[in-house]
Length: 250
Image 1 (cartoon, rainbow, N blue to C red):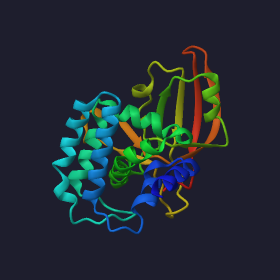
Image 2 (image 1 turned 30 degrees about the horizontal axis):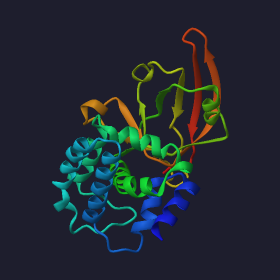
Image 3 (image 1 turned 135 degrees about the horizontal axis):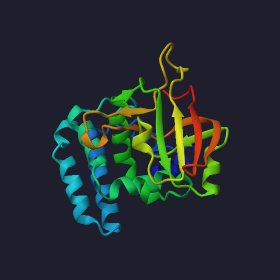
Image 4 (image 1 turned 45 degrees about the horizontal axis):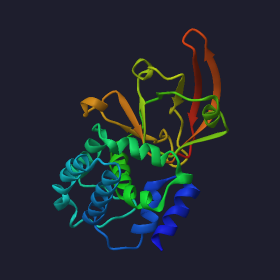
């Protein structure tokens, strides 16, 4: 069944958007409107579980208004979403609601994701993934991410390969990123791609057109990095971890 596949795939790859696509959209004649319906159902279901139904209804009403843009569009692996829909997915994700936090929590723990969560959040995560891919940016050399980590959690970032399994907000300027966390990731994206000759790797999207996102660079799930070096800044009492993009990110 689709459910079994999606869980197996998420646990194997740590990538919910692609797991959802492979398990439930490959070789089907589903349209973007069908995926949108499933995304709406999923967001409403998760909202009800968290006692945030009115918030979920507000979010999904915005999506429902755009259903007409997806009726004639069949899904495909490299689908270009209708512009209005891509914009709305990012807009909804950027709003302060239960959704970004829930998605981060679920996608950051692919090994403990439940079948219900995978089915509820899979459709919207795939739409958001496609939306970000349309805005992909390869000209930002370095990004920064501030985190509050225990010593144990920090070990996940100082190993040979580090993989981000959730949608991850980073910042283009160090000063915008540095806040309360005890750990700063400095991520080098100035790496040539394996897939496209003479082009830099592709890990995420820059969103200057969104006022509350203009300083940030959003990475999609599944991007990989290599640990470069570690420093401790005694003045700021901050652990600094340098990561470098894998050449496989495209």
